[in-house]
Length: 117
Image (cartoon, rainbow, N blue to C red; front, side, top):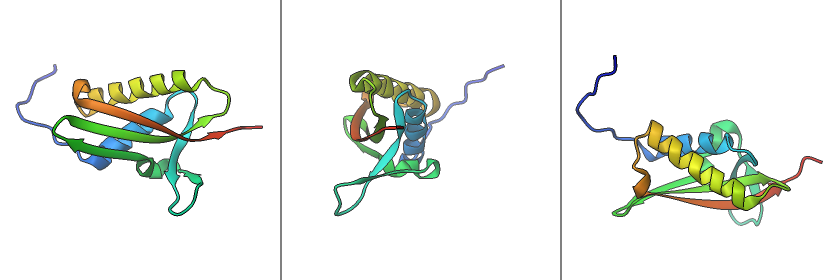
């Protein structure tokens, strides 16, 4: 049986970044998360354990903002992938971290396209 427990849930920005990063990786067309290299115009594809470097989480009085820096597969419909990505991350954060979707803003930054040829 499920029982409701009174109280509040506090989730750190690092945990939110990890959840958002793993949700993003599960989306079709997303190759991985990217990190902008300082002083360079190139990006680095991040390994699975370093996903949070490609996710920036900030909050203010209007709510929570999650910026995802992603690498997409070359040839995918970017608009569709971004819509799916935004929806998947919002749903996952609402389900796992109990974040109100109306107070959540998701920004998607396509840093690179990767081809497998």
